[in-house]
Structure formats: structure tokens, C-alpha cells
Image (cartoon, rainbow, N blue to C red; front, side, top):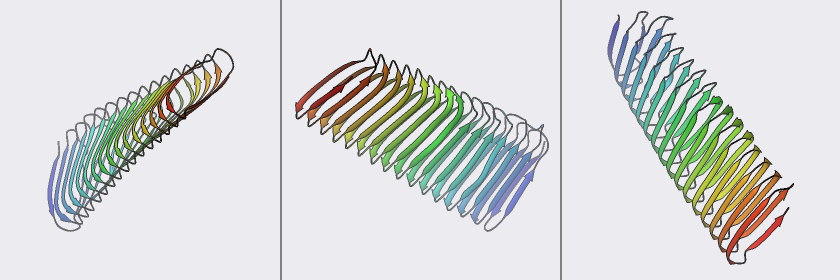
Length: 363
């Protein structure tokens, strides 16, 4: 067992610990500005290693590595101040390991990578202004990623590739926050994003997989949520928005047994849904003024339920295939509904209440 501890004060101090036994600990504490903390725990047999990095001040940086085929490894880093960066936090080939990052201050940057891990976790907390985070989990299973950001102009990005039973949770509170990411070659994985503030943007995609879920919640102004599920089956996508000038878009292609749902409350909301495949269902709801809803489905046994309440709402539904069902309800003034269906076995149920409403159905 090896134990390393160092306290560094003020500018441009570098520490690198390279340990090659089990249950190693590296502890670095730095106070000042321009400090660099580097920890390297690399071996094919080590396990139970711990890296703890603490920096207080401005313009400090951290680099930590745990690359091995071991388990129960831990990396913890905390930075307070302005202009601090975590250039690379990496765990490779480990299981039941964890990475915990906390940054408090302004203009902080974080990059985290986990490769070939099992039952491992990434937990990132940023509080301040102009924070950025980039997180990657590859070739892993039963891993979890959590990003929490509070402040202004925060960015949370998460990528999971060739994984199963993994989860991504991102929470943002402030202004001009952006959360984006993608899950590739996934099975039974889920994404949950919640945002509060002004001008928030979420873009998440799932490509090639089954049994995956995407859930996005937004509350505030000028929010936009986009999600895409391509070449997936038995997957669901849900978007909830509350505020002003919200926009939601869900696109699903080459799917089966998939469900998509969008709920919007506010003013000038726009909903767009595109689905391709079979046994698909889409449920859409809007409440407010100047809302626009568009649904396109291509395949078999589709079902669309659309409801609009407010003023100047417009709904458009396009279906191609057989046994499609559309139910649409509009309440307000100057609403317009256009439904187009092809093939046989389709049914349309539409209801409008108000002045200047128009229904056009083509089968």
C-alpha cells in the first residue's frame, strides 16, 4: 500500500503520483493560482485506489488517470475559484468505480471519460457562470452519469456508446443553459433532463438500440427540446415544457412498438413529430396561444391523439399505411385542422369549439 499527500500553495506547482499496488491513495491540495495537479494510477491488477484532488484559487488545472482492469476505484476532485479546468478525468477497464467532480466559481471546464466500465458512475456538480462539461461512457454496462449545473451559460454534454442498462441525468438551473448528448448502440438505457431558466436548449439522440427512454422537462422562457430515436425498438420519448416560446421536436425512424408524447403550456409553442415504422403511438397536447402542431406517421397501426386549447392553433396530421387512428380536439379561436390518411381501415375523430375553425380530412 502506498499513500501520497501533498499540499501546494500558489503558482505553477505540478504533482504526479504513479502507484502500482493495491489500495493506493493520492491526495493533492492546492491553494493559489496557476496550479497543476496530475495523478496517474495505472496498472492491470490494482484495485481499490483513491485519488482526491482539491484546488482553491484561479486558473488551476487537474489531470487524473485510472487505467487498469480493476475495481472499486475512486476519483474525487473539487475546485473553487475562477477559470479552473479539469482537462481529463479517465477511468478505463474498471468496475464499480466512481468519478465525483465539484466546481464552484466562473468559467470552469470539465472533461470526463469512462471506458469499458461496469456498474460505475460519473457525478458532476458545477455552480457559477460559464461552466462546461463533457462526459463520455463507452463500451460499458450498468453505468450512470449525473450532471448538475447552476448559474449562467452552462453546457452539459453526455455521450454513451455501446452500453446497456445505463442512465444519464442532467439538471440545469439558470440562464442560457444547454444540455446535449447521444446514446449509441444502447439497450434498456434512459436519459432524463430537467431545465429551469431562460433560453435553455436540449438535444438528445438515441441510435440503434431497444427499450430506451428519453424524458425532457423544461420550465422557463425560450426553451427548445429536440430528441431523436433512430433504428430503435420499444423505445419512448417524452417532452414536457412550461413557459413562453417553447419548441419541441421528436423524430423516430425505423421503429416498432414505440411511444412519443409532448406536452406544452405557454405561448407560441410549436410541436413537430415524425415517426416511421409500426405499432407507434403519439400523444400531443398544447395549451396557450399561437400553437402549431404537426404529426407525420408512416407505417402500420399508428395512433395519434392531439389536443389544442387557446387561440390561433393549427394542427396537421399526415398518415400513410393501414389501421391508423386520429383523435383531435381544438378549443379557441381561428383554429385549423388538416388530416390526411391513405390506405384502408383509418378513422378520424375531430372536435372544434370556437370561431373560424376549419377541418379538412382526406382519406
